Length: 564
Picture 1 (cartoon, rainbow, N blue to C red):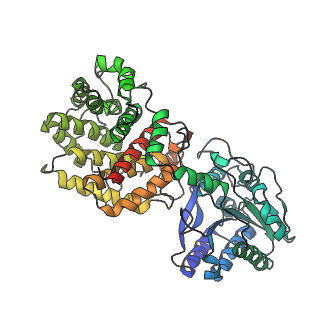
Picture 2 (cartoon, rainbow, N blue to C red):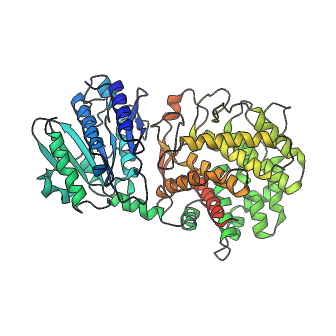
Picture 3 (cartoon, rainbow, N blue to C red):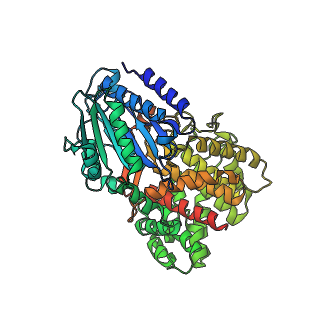
């Protein structure tokens, strides 16, 4: 009988059987905070592999027999050695409904949902109180984009079924059209799942004695015949990924940075990004006149009183607009914003930052106080900034940051704010500043920890210490930006270049041709518990915060590529 421990033990055995081929991860988090276990082939997200990428899914029903069959199938594949594994990259979700299995609630998940029910799931990503498993599984499959999904069911009546996209496999397996028109395989095989393309799917219903023979038939077909080509979903990701950084940056610049309401950093960053593109590509259309007109009402009045740090950081474009237009009056906005920061004494967060040392303020203060020092040379700005960076004491020994002193949670974007704040600070802090070595150490420890936690897709999880929490867009952009900036300016080793490139791969795949993005965490204040961070809505579509961060990342990564 399958249990959480036997699944773990089985995965451990598989990892030992094929060292270097598989890694352990999770593809989701249940309402009981359990992880949905997954086994990832080393080429599951590879852009160049010639191996057929197959994802095995078992246990959607929550029945022991289905989970046992999936684990048996993995054992058979591992036992096939190089004959199979050199041709086929097999990843697996052996138990897609762990709560249903644990609670003996099959086919329910114990929370009122049914992971084997209707697909595709609509809305409530990933905070559905009844059915989070479906949402995690759906997005994870679509953006892994395997060439084939193989679903296993235990039953005495042998049967193969194929979805619409997998019809080429039907004759060799004597397969029928898949039953359940609204099931997982049927939904993957039609239309444009998650805005991508279809994925062939087959379902095998068999008993344990029939399984070896039937899998052997399937794997023999796939090894010897060109029946299965690259899935349409994978082709869609290839197209997205093969766009240049500048091409993607221009897509983002059309969608974002076109408004300054409300006055907040999420509007200011993409405006800055539009100006940065022109710095790289000066022969293109100059956005400065349009941006100057857009901001005229704001710039003529100056920075309003009593703005929060996030609003003060909205003027990150000001010095760039001054350079682009030759009008130094825009620089005054940076100075006005920086002058709102007031020391509360050494060891305390400056006004108007949260006294609890929130990581958001690391970015907001680093971006503004650093620029003010660049423009004036006045050390009062860097002294306030450096003291704030080292005084929070919310970075832990492994390198990650709590969200703030009262929220000991490793929120992905919270660490992204820390990464960008440290990178911005080091961009402007003089080499001889007495606190620079400590800040470089803080930055390096965070970069190392983020690289260690980076998912094979290139992405970061929304809650960094919980595998299976959703792969989050903004944190990945912020990590990539901070690493690229550090490498380019020399305060981070070039050893991190692979992590930057992998992060860019994940982001490029998640930006469509009109600037929509995939799974950017919604606006998030300090939460009361880790469940609330896990349940922060994931935005799929237009999101100015995500678009702006992606634009900065694209430009910074392009600068790194060009060595400028």
